Image (cartoon, rainbow, N blue to C red):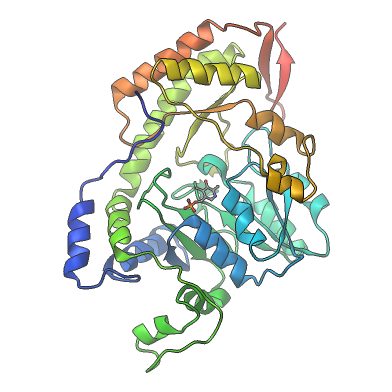
Length: 400
Ligand SMILES: *Cc1c(COP(=O)(O)O)cnc(C)c1O
């Protein structure tokens, strides 16, 4: 069986865990937490990076920092993981779902402005698959309407927009180091704080509402309860694992990119034959090969492909059930048909196995099986895909 994802040890994980114990401190903000956050600050040119137990927690911390109140509205794509919405919903906000672009599957920046009301407080762009949203336009809209921008960069660690690292462009960026992401500490994440005004309060909220971080730096002689807060620190044991992965930041990315490029080259002829559509990466984006997907002509063909691959021992998966069409989305008044691009694309997308440790034979086997499937389409022979090159967008069409 070729798994959808597989964990890889990059070499030093276990040694660093042992070392964390020999430091005598395995709780939060120990040696390895510092190594990881300082490395990311340096490498990504980020003002402040704080490790968190997950990207979900990083998003929650951002929601606390911008003081989300019941009734506030937060604009985000519906084509995303639940945490993008939940972090704000937990504070009483209402998620306002924006449709996505057909090329990148990212939030459609030209549809944001129509959703802004007096209650809008923030925009949460999600960099799907590590491919950047059009951040210049999003920042411009946010500035014009005095809104916060929180990048859900869960999938976008070490990816760039016009040369700038994702997560460092909005007021905040949120990373995930969950085992399904490019760099894994099992469960983990980080918040990137790009606006200095929030750094001190972020440290306080993350440390149970105390000024303990200042105390540890020797800036005050005792610490106490100064604000609301929670415990948003991962243990240094997890950070030790992350450090062993971050040390190999580019090596991991290069491996993933070579798999991504091999998939792309091998499947290109099928895109030219209009049986599938491949990912589109705009010129402004340098992606990190977080995932590789293909878009089929319709949902039935996608589901059948997934089933056929499973029979061949290849685990391919789809995601997400768009949030607006899920039971919680319906509670916010949404229904099927509200976001046509999201609904269309989410039903036709299939993700292929992708992990840094993917062996060449696994890749070749997957590519050849996907190829067989596309050479012998079992049904819908007259359906095909066209790409509107002029606008860089796609539309469903019939083969002539
Ligand atoms: C994985 C993911 C998250 C959640 O990350 P955790 O670290 O598991 O909390 C949030 N948003 C997106 C877009 C993700 O892909």
